[in-house]
Amino acid sequence: MAEGCPAHCQYCYLAGSLSGPPVTRVNADLDEIPANLAAYAGMGTVTSRRVTRRDEGTTFEASCYTDPLALEHLTGSWRRAVEHFGEWEAPVQLRWTTKFGDVDGFVGLRHNGRTRVRLSVNCLPVTTRMEGGTSPLADRLAALRRLALDGYPVGLTIAPIIPVDDWQRHYGELLDAVAATVSDVPGLDLTAELITHRFTPGSKEVLLGWYPRTRLEMDEQARSRKHGKFGAVKYVYPPEIMAELRGWFESSIAARLPACRILYWT
Image (cartoon, rainbow, N blue to C red; front, side, top):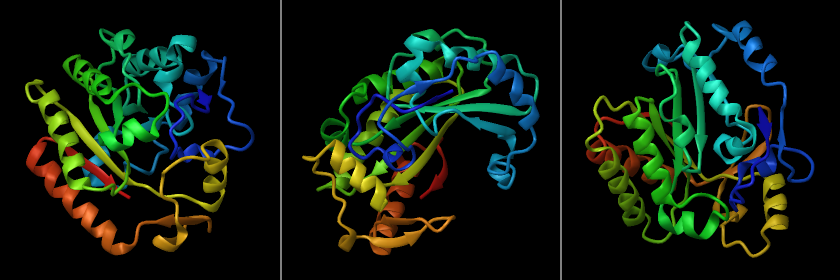
C-alpha cells in the first residue's frame, strides 16, 4: 500500500531496497487492493512450511517497504485493511510492524484476531541515538499493551540487534520493560522476531549519504561476508558474535517472557 518511510532511522534497510530518492509513495486504489487479495490465499510458503506457524494460514505482510502507522493519519489505509481481514472468513492473517505509537484508531475495530501488529523496538542506546523520527520506546510499549488488551495478536520486532557497549544490560532492560508492559494482559498472544544488523555495499553508500555523521558501525573488516538468495553481498556479524547474541536472546526471552514465541532469528 506504500513505499518509503519518514522515520529516519540511521540503519534503515530500505536504503538498499528501494531505488531513487527517499520519497514516500502511497497507493490510492484502496478498493482494488483488498479485492485482489483472495487470489493469493493458500499460495504462501513462509508459514505453511513450518509446523509451529501453520495456524497463521496465509499471511499478508504490509510493512516490507514502509511503516504503516507513520502514514495512517494521511491515508487510513491500514485501518481499512484491518477491517477487511476481520471480515474475511478464511485462514488468513494481516501482519505489520511499526515504530510508532498512535494506535487509537485501531482499538475497538472488529479485527477478529486476524491482524498481528508487531512493535519494532530496541534498546535505549539505539532508539535514542539512531532513530530520528520515531515514537519514543515508552510510547511503543504503551501501544503494544493497548492492542494486546484489545485482543490483537501482537509481536516484537527486535531489530536491528546491535552489540553496543554493555549490550546485555541494555537489552535486558528492554525485555524487562516489555515484561512489565504485558504481565497482566489476559490471553496474551505474543511473538518475537530477532534480526541482527547487516548492511550491503549499496545500503552503506546510501546511508552515509543520508547520515554522514552516523556512529553506526559499518566496517566490512569487522564483519562476515555473506551472499543472499540471489547472490547479493551482505555483511553480518562474525559467527562467534552471532552465536553469543542468539544464545543470550533465546535464554533471556524464555526467562523474562515465557509466553513469547520466537518466530525466527537472523
